[in-house]
Length: 287
Length: 276
Image (cartoon, each protein chain N blue to C red):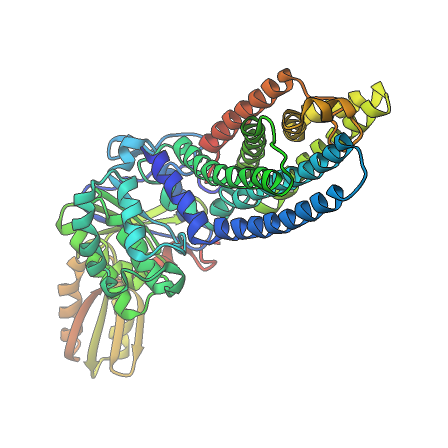
């Protein structure tokens, strides 16, 4: 069984990241939400209606992982085909196709056949076809795989632009750094079950890590930090530790200063998503 | 309607990937070779002392060989072009971008079927018209009921196409090809067993042939088409491989149509239900 007891709630207008190791059930979950795979039990509501219905699909865009399509089509023809399948009129298509080709940086390649496209170019045209009908909800399965840094930035900008126009984006990605700077909220899936979620826009939410540059810090003061903090590490003048809440940080700062230490910097940072991911998935990586 | 869009793309694919052109080129080469053979045979027979009705029978049989070759080429075209269409797209994930568009799955399948059916229609029409023309120009033989025979062969191609599309919703491309060609092989050998058994008056073997045709009625349609294309004289002489000693009945044509419709319905049902 690929997934079980899967319960997800994605808010309209947010960029939602769906994270998990290989084989955790991410793609299967997306396929179920799109109606490509039928769940053995339970139901999924997408935009308030049962997943997979034709009416709902009018409002959904999808970029499959490792997008590929008929290689004998040109980029322009591919977009026209997908637009027609979405019910767009010829005049609307004439308007949308150049806009989308421009958006994904493929305007000069409109007449080029897909067989001449690199993997990155295929991902870009795949993203364009997912947006051809301006969907309310967009599923992106590993949209940045195969893309160079410029391509990743482009995808990031496109995703943000979709949020600005009010669309919801469901993003499935392995690139945690990309997710971290793009998503509003993430959920973690491990062995087919949701094992946690995290709001990336709320600074006070969750664990805080502090990086401080401190001189003349007594050793016993470092030991005393364990009253508020965990994962305490000292490397010469560099002190790092984690706290469960940012509320305790002023007290910690006073404690350090009272010990006579010279504090040159004291920088709270949210726990990097990668660390959070590893922490939630455990040492086995969720496999 | 989504099915028409998919049909258009499927037909265009055959043209753009040069499948149809390659098939027509090979068909053209076959027709040229056949025309040369037919003409040479006509010249040789014209100089012989053979009775006219035997001469006619020989030329008529040679013409049937031409139609039979065109029939086999059309059946192979129907199988080879469609064998990868669903199974291949499912395996590669290409289908995901289409099946998530607001088009019901049954329309995807119908669209693909219509696209291939259109391509095969062009091929059968050109090949049968070509062979008929060669018979007329090279040997002066006018093929009776050519349109009806062409329609029967087209029905045979549609049957094979439907089976290929149906099996494509279940099996991988390779397995699909093996299954459909195997089924057509059963029909092929069964059809010939039935003909030869009728000539040698072996009722039990005729039954074997009929059962084979019930398993896969494609070749029976060819035998009926061949029967339609022969003159009353040729039918009565019955000493060539295409004599149709045992002619598939009209009921068998009806059976083939029902077979096609059931296979089509099963293909739609399974494609709608299966995970992609």
